[in-house]
Amino acid sequence: MSGKRYSPEEIISKLREAEVLLAEGVSVGKVVRRLGVTTVTYYRWRKE
Image (cartoon, rainbow, N blue to C red; front, side, top):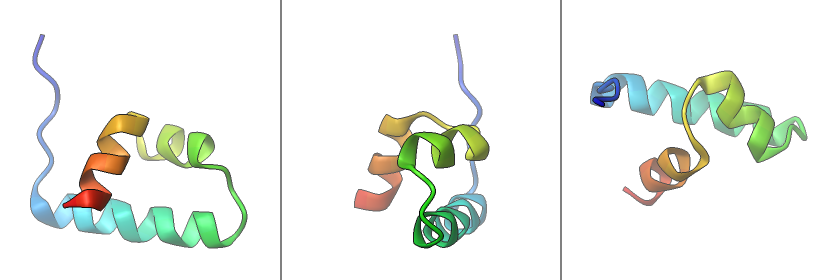
């Protein structure tokens, strides 16, 4: 099973959106659900 590949531009925009949501007090679980990625993917993107 192959997952969707995101371009670097898409990753950056999703991380920026996540930062805004987290600043508003939304939990990480709800943020990743809204972005359509897994929690592991979110933390991996942040690490990079």
